Amino acid sequence: MSSERNRGRVRTVEEWLERLSSRDVNAREEALSALEESLVSGAPESRERTARALLEELGRPGTAAVEPVLFLLQRSWWPPQASLAGLAVKNVVEVLARMEAEAPALEHAASVLTFVCRVDPSWLRALDGLFQHPEASVRAAMARVVGRLGNAAAPALPRLLELLEDDEPVALSALESLAALALLAPDLTAPRLLEVVRGSDGARLYLALVTLRGMLDELSLDELPVPALPDLEPTLLRTLTAPEAPIRQEVASLLGLSGPLSPAAIAALREHLRDESPHVAARSAVALVRSGAPAAEALFLLKGQLGPAASRELQEAAVAALEEAGPARLGRAKGMLETVARDASGLTREALFELLGQIP
Image (cartoon, rainbow, N blue to C red):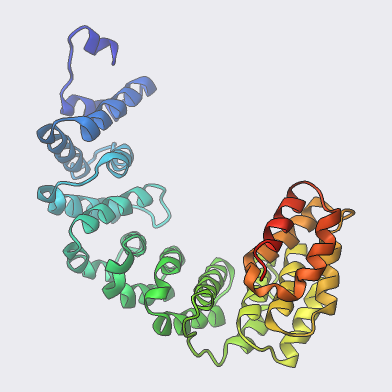
């Protein structure tokens, strides 16, 4: 409770809003605390009045309080009042249109729109046109909104896939959301993700690989049909030469998921057992083990990385690769893991025995 309240001075919502733009750090923090308290624990009428004032502040020309207002709304405005949904959409979209596509406040703005759509899913249909908004910031925010709506986002999945070819910040937001939604329509999403892998690089390529791997892994675990991707292996083999180690890691893991490997794929993975990155080497080894390919060389590498003389980095790389693969697929590595676990110590020992306890 502030000292002014203790003296009987109770500020109005409008006065607290004005203090959000103060140069005085203490004044801003006091205003944030008071407005949050009103949003969270005030009477229903007080909560709605505070939320309305905050939303109207977003729409006020020249306001300097956009970031703190969005922060408050995404942090404490739940559930949003249905009567304020239209005002929230209008003013948040107007603010988004003035942002850069990579502005930190964009995340908060997307959260506010998500709240509105969660309370009333019909708003997602009403916002359909925003996927083609001329401002990249609005499109990026919509990509994030869709990824947080679960099954309710299924009708918007085609729109999300269209954003994969958009400007970099928009495409990255779409890929991050697709990681949560790809299983809603694997036959639709898997080929599109493979197209992104085939035609991109850098962060866009990495996220596409992560999303595709996550989807195929989940389908495999649940024993569900895996989409036909006839060009998967040749595309991955070309990508395995990428200069970035995290990309090579994902490619190696995906090759282990892609079914029986061709002689060319086996040769490529064996070559990467000597990769300069211990993480790439470990994932290449695990891919050979789980795919059913000849694995003596791969098991030897993993044994060396897990041995007591190995560095902490090597041990962590091997453990991470094994844990990612899933114990059910590591039957051929059981004997090697039992041998190594007896001489291991600390966290590596604990991780190995936990893995062994789950291997059939």
